[in-house]
Amino acid sequence: MNLPNYFLADLPPDAVLRPEMVAEACQTLKRNRERYLLPRSTDSVIQALVEVARLWVNPNSPWRAAAVAVDRSAPGFSPEMLGAGLDAYFRQWTPRALGSLVVQDLGHAQRLDRFVSNDAEMVQGTSAFVRGPDLLAHVTAGSLPTPVMTSILHGLLVRSAQFVKCASGTSRLSRLFAHSLREVEPKLAACLELAEWAGGESTLEAALFGEADCVVASGTDRTMEALRRVVPRRVRFLEHGHRVSAGYVAREVLGPYDEVRVLQAAAADVAAWDQLGCLSPHVIYVETGGLLPPETFAARLAEELGQLEAKLPRGPVSAETASAIFQRRDFYRVRAAASDGTRLWASPESTAWTVVYEADAQFQFSCLNRFIYVKAVDTLEDCLRLAEPIRGQWSTVGLAAAGLRVDELAQQFASWGVTRVCPLGRMQQPPLTWRHDGRPVLGDLVTWTNHERPPE
Image (tube, rainbow, N blue to C red; front, side):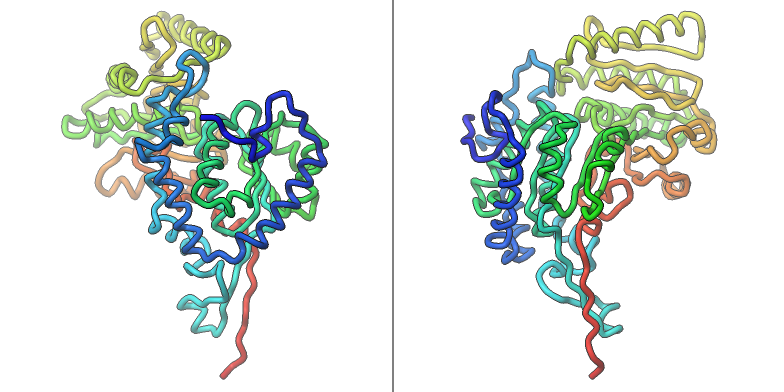
């Protein structure tokens, strides 16, 4: 699909992006917001977003076809992975789900439209109205397309003009999404800009941050520190730094009635988006004492990943990434030869998937791309004690448990600091109402005005 040069990210690769171009684009966005976005109701914005989502799940849509038309020899996601991931994501974009997000974070479905009162506010004789930033700047990172689309969704819901700065080499799917929005609602797309440049371009960043009212950034902790130094103090700065996730399998689901379901769920989480998101598991902890020992769980998980590779192949990786996977495999082969507490299973003649079992339950960072550790633990207390180095960074736990232990284990994880507990198999499918890093995503963007009415 040949996209027109509508956004800055559409410019030819040899085009030079100058600070004055960024500043002028920001000023245009703010004018367009006044004309086209602020007068819209919440319901009409939601309906437009739902129409965009329908384009992406329609198997005959040119936007979906363009999204999954990738070079199978180049690093990136496979067409099968892109199709499955985009389907799971956009099927959540329903009027009910989007409306629930607004009510959850803002307390009323029309809070962005006018002064309104919920039940508690009626009793107090107060009402409230919220407004989003005039210009919202997004600094994105990573190769997953869906976080960028979610950021744009949030900005449209709060009626903000938006400038999305994409990481180098990652704007293709974001551009497709922006152009699909333009097809459905050209006036909403006129309140959105996308550009792509390498991090650290100080003059471009200064032009963008000088016009923005709020900056939302994701990336490494080092990137967040660098941005904190250059974002003006008057600008609201919302950061999402490095996060990791893991799975936890309780002993009571390691029996003949549940083990197949649990193994398939674990494999799905490892495979989703090729394990490249902050919600992907680095480790799956498996309790001892079940009918299926942790080591056997690891062997069976390897079988599941092998079968899943045939249906949902991992995308090609760079030579550097492949070399890193081979080196780590060699390390664990040597360790396995010397110790009964380590085992390794790997895809033959490729780096498509790797499973490492270790009796040592210390948290271990994976090299990702479907490289998963399975660790044996006796209790959750042991798991959390050994995961202490990542306390504050553990984002999501995919939990497989049964009965009363589901709530008990979830409460322990929450008390320790994990910000999301979900069923194993759905780690990379957070609902639209998910509170990213434990924060209200719309609530952090808006400013409130309270109206205290005079007594009657």
